[in-house]
Length: 633
Image (cartoon, rainbow, N blue to C red; front, side):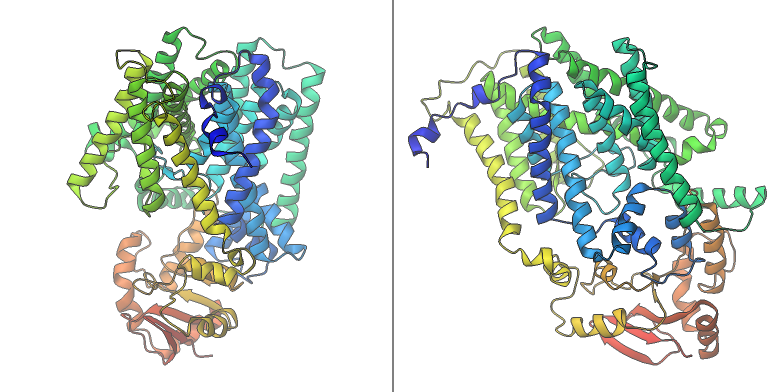
């Protein structure tokens, strides 16, 4: 064991100093990637999440028994994704759903950590600093998400996150000279995520142009064609063995389904238009904050003329700027000429390509604050590092996590206007301190390390390391959550621990219940029960308002039929909110004979409702504010 004096003698200045050449950076690339992946693996295992690709894998593997007419089944099963197919294959081989979920949680977290660390290595040229950045990012809330939320390293809706980190990882492999492996993955990537594959192909083209590399060399074509061939094989498996046949739709049905989806979901969520928001000016600034800051930081770094951006880092930013230009052009076209934009561009959600800008902004902010404070010992950077440490520490204990960028329209502290405004001011000051330090406008240099003031940068970095390590230790001391998924649900408050009978209710009424389980809107409101606990049941669960997605227009038509027959939708053009508002009265007026008919036609075995709802059925069981009603046979 090292003595205290030896530990105090560790000089972070030399550990975080940039490597002298591009060759040294490339030499450290593999080591940095593997170490970051290992840290991500630990993070994903100790703090897993239920992932949508595993839930979809359950549908494909057939373990839930969901019928093929269910909108969720039509959309999720018919949408091609290697992530879904891989999960289904593992479940089909006999692995438990929770084991498969752990595998993907660990694997996807490892990918996220490795992609960020390797990008940081190219941009900052300091391996240990590159490894620190994903640890700090883990506790922060990423903002500037362009209407497509990004969480680091995991979120239940995992597809876009894996697409973004996979794209970044492959791009760093390409820039670092792992050309054959990178091009093989470029060819395969459409099997992972169609939209991000287009982004990756665009940036790969930019790399070929910048490096003046001939893409038609045999040594480059073979791995790329091999990747494309594997993608086609996987696609053929999907088309012939997974995708279900659906009835033909005439153009009028397609148009109606598209317009209804955009009205009820698209233009309110991922497909929002800035021009339709209440405060267009504020919304515009907030939407493009990441792009403005990335351009500002990149310009400032180039202005330093001190080797701040060399070789791989410059290539990475140039490729990202090329993608940014394409994505912003499409966004402007959507804003000002919506009717002229081809529908596939709207469906592909190309604005989420700009989430890569947000990720790199956070990476550069954290990396350069630490470098300027620790390596260059600048006072202004020390103040910024202090603010960063306080935000990171506070975010570790705040349930909603804290952002690092100013976000005036983000209710960080719910509706507390003073607290939100104050926090926006803090993050703005942090940015101003960093920019001022980069421009070297005063501020002076720190005292030598033999004084406590001189050791403040090391202390702040140590605190951030302790934040990540403390969280990992908190989860590691209770490893039962890894092997016992019900305990995981209980520990993460997915189940009502104050209701002692919940395990009996869960097993008898949800797992062992007969037929489809229909869950009413707001069923879990005020019940301390989370639908994540239902994913273990292997029971088919459905509930109005039935939706769908234009990735599979058949799912939109199926939802229209179910909303009419099950949820009493009087008009196919009724919005989801209107349907939910009218649903309690609709179900309260259904007779026992009508419920029996629904069971015969759709196989619905039981209703799970909030206690506030009333139906003409005998109550079968209850748990806290949940009520279960079995439909008559």
